[in-house]
Length: 492
Image 1 (spheres, rainbow, N blue to C red):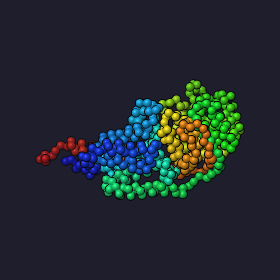
Image 2: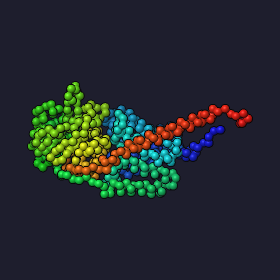
Image 3: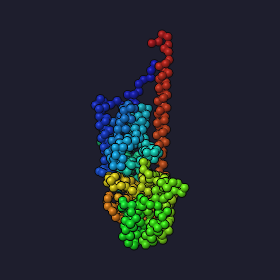
Image 4: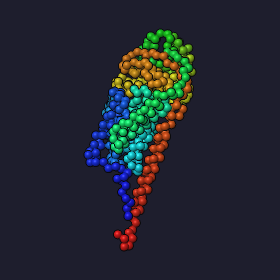
């Protein structure tokens, strides 16, 4: 006796016409998601962009679900990260495929849950799966790459972006996918009007969470900061731009690799930098290189050298996340912050800023404001520069700190703790951006504990997928035993 077929109750069976629409829905979803980022940066699309994909997965076989998710990832990253071709040429297709493999993993998890619990429950769990996969893609493997998390799409929606100070960018992603899941379920079951009403309710809660009276850090000191923008790694050019500031600027920050030399090994070069700091009576942050004691000459740290207004070297920060596939120095250790006359400063270098733990660890180490020397080459296109700039604004909200970001060819910017772009220079300009910032104390709710959310999602995903896989193995084993049992005499 065989067990009854429950597939019709666990997984709704789509019509033949619906099957033919799966690929079209998937490609539409990826195009909508890519349009959430610069350019054209239509942020509201994020709240419905995943709906077509979730609808396309309804009732599909495990193989089809995995394939559609991979196709979604390939199209999404191909559209959103088209600028990678300017760096890697045709090899960028391979990078898109590697990133799309994480969406294949999402499809694997979704298919297991759909097979075990049915489509509706799989969609309910989809936001948790999405964040877990995002965490893996962004931080937990060699190809880690945090760009294009859905949470970053809300930079131009200030009220909603403030929720990042509670749950972080990962938490915003969770909210966005949750709204998409609600819309998908209500369209299929109750119709689009009910879906719009429920999604609107979730959006309202998100806005209230972000725009409400949250615990704000306290201002300790206000001062003027300057970010130099030039792609020329030329000492004289950086000196001219800095000396043209005149008095009254307390912090001058140069981009990553603003010098390709080793100032700590070159007394004459170091003396010129110290003289600039003394003349301007400003803290000077210089992107440069630093030899590693006992290592071969070609092995170095990508460093940000910090010099005080009296010309004393206060220390240096070493880049924690060197860019893969480039000779970008050896990974740094520790989270140094620097006591300056204007407050305790934290420094992160370019790619470091893209990773959620960096700013949080610097704030926990006492940083009252943050400086992010950045190198974004001009020929990487304005789209790359604008996407990177948006990430800086979201990170400022997470930790509630002012961020000064000197970028080689833009966007050099000064961001306030609510993610507002206070001062900036356009892509490709050469010059200096100056603005007032504050040294802040206190910690956001995200820094205090909200950062654990993606790890909770990862743990829950591992449990759900593992339990579903074990349940599937048990059912197959039971079915196999039942099929192997000999028929009783006289019983047909």
